[in-house]
Length: 302
View 1 (tube, rainbow, N blue to C red):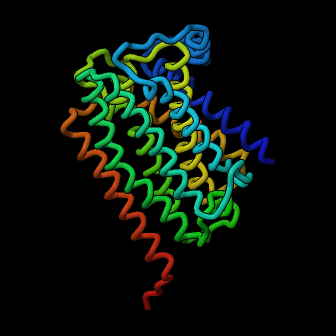
View 2: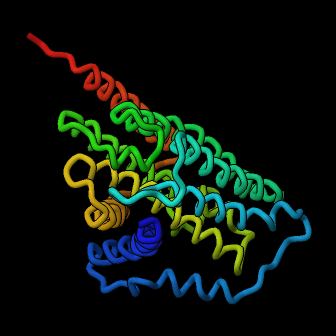
């Protein structure tokens, strides 16, 4: 069962970028690129060597592997529906948050190691947005733990929730989808297609990477997006149909279609508005946690 869970996670990680590209192309009235074009691009990068600046240290060379490793480990904590996760233990929901933080910290240090002012600006923005979005993630994880009384993802989605918790689960899934936009550097927080270094956030930190190192960073981004997307799909599926054959396609549809629609219909936020956007997500996460707490008290009004 764990092997099936792993295969489904990998399938979701590969399918989400293709779904985003295809959704964006259809809404623009274009045929669009191949569904698996991102895999061909990464294959080209894996065949190329890496070139390093003389100003960088060994830290810069090690970060792509650390970033990919952190994303892969975080992905292994997530179950798909009612399937058991590959890695499961009490408190793994906290381990997920700080495993993702480890990858972010490593990439920030690598950007600062280059000595580039543009990458330094991107690193400072990434650190700020990460500090603002982490409370929202922890609040949602706390909400799920409060509703089920479990601190392991595998137990969270196999124990099951009562019907009165449906609204809290759906709101948790909504907040997690919003966090995907921040964590994966998508519109309206960031734009992966921009070419202006002054306005880049995630992409500017990777400007000095090429070849196999850049391929590792791209694959890590897919894994991180898949982990958060599956977590949102698990929360939504727990409210109606907590099975793997429903949660896996739901993760692709939720993230792929929502990101594709937003990137086709909205413009990127001004940098000064990103903090408001992320703080709004954190406030909504706090409201969801408070709602779950009231539901858990089972107050009856006479």
